[in-house]
Length: 217
Ligand SMILES: [Zn+2]
Image (tube, rainbow, N blue to C red; front, side, top):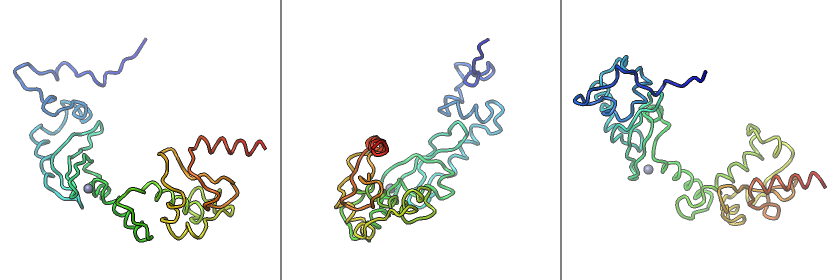
């Protein structure tokens, strides 16, 4: 026999008459109400709404809670927040409370561009974030023993030329902008170092093809 899931089917006693406004409709989605126990939910609609309203106007770093947005299937509350920069985001209340959500993302971008500036590379806000992250990851692979790829890089003697090691600006001006999201740094000679003559941006597909060719030689 085929078994069908009953999760989305409301029991008959939860249906409301046409004259009575459905609380499921009022709350937007019935999914989270059901997740919290349907009719057995210990909180009334009014109590839930007043609980939701409690957080309006609270500030968490750059974010100020503007209004309740929704609850997900697990009952997690999401709020619409306005960032100091003017952007609006919908984020989890628990993320705000535990300090994970501090801004719409602008804070992280500023940190990156500040670090880039401190490396003598100033070229607009976050234009080179991808390349900066590639540079950070490359340094970790070669010099951070805690990096999980270290054994295949620094661990077997692969290093970064001094020009790149000291300046993300040098790295970006030699490598240029990453052509697309699928691209990463490819060392042409797999045993060679990270240096201008041995590196290019390629896709993972090209890199694994090259590795296969090299193995077959
Ligand atoms: Zn922002």
